[in-house]
Length: 485
Image (cartoon, rainbow, N blue to C red; front, side, top):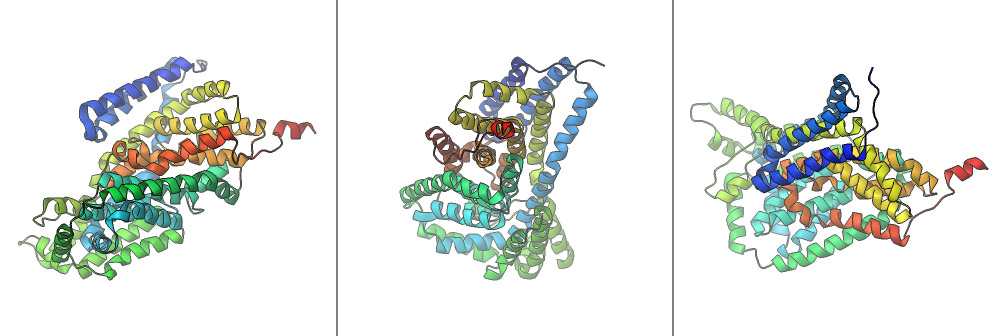
């Protein structure tokens, strides 16, 4: 049996450098469509290079193949949720749930405050249910529709949605990542949340202030005549009413009751289909084929909404685009990207290439400020390389935990840093599971909305500033000194 060689820094750099160059080339050559295949190929060839390095260092193909299979297995839960979210969007468009949200949003949200209000609304919902994904797929989708109606920028709106959703998710005790970070670091959940407030709340306040100023600058864009026109289109094609929001209320209630995401979203999608059959009979009659009876046609239409989404022709091209979409088939490209990205990450971890980076970083991270900065950089790098926010919390947490203990830093410093660097940067990376999900749901490239996801950009920077200034860095007696007593 061949001995396993320890990976070198050169080994680690080669596949990452190739990935950076190939992804850059993908974006340059294919632009916004780079996530529709070109990025996947770049990740696949980068995986091949990492595999060759693993084979060179003595790993057998069976071991590497097993690592890849386990890596893909990690994505299956996210993929199931993603497919069901596709169905939910399709049935909620058909049922009038999303059109109703857009209609009422146009009535109550002032354009001057729209971006800030969107951010705050998503923050409240995400904090209540503990899920940035569910928030983006429901409230976020509707807010993009409202932005279109108000003549506001959808990309900026997506940035506001992401900012609010991840602020709420980050501070919610119901969130998986909020529970995972202290579990990895060894801190108490509520101590962890309390310690996060010092970096998270100021970052969110700054982001909201920026959105307020951006809203004032965009206030004159909305035209009353266009809003009236959109409302007429919505009322002319859908049965609009508060009862259409019942599927949303049920989904939020199930999330509050901590039902797992997949069955909760599945129930929401199914309820949307039932609501369509009950309340959108005129719309269904207009959509079904003349050769089908109403019963057969309505069943086919609802069935199609689950797997291929819903489409409508209103006579207004922008509204047709806004009110059409969803379906499991629409999520296939996103699932492809997630699987290939995790394939690359799993090989990089198995061969030991990620650990090489961390060990190299620790050699130069002498101060507390540099250690926390290194942890944040590692979390971001893991989000880019391993392509999953859970891995971006678990792996750096495992690797840095002993160093924090050795330097007499409280475990809440590590757990907060894991979230400051890992949780909130994940949706900014197109091939990360979170970035791919958000693009699949919001239909906007993360490279576009990342510029406006102010909370997600400010929080890591503020965390680094706190670290170097020594603000709210809790100290304890170093573990090795305790053991010597």
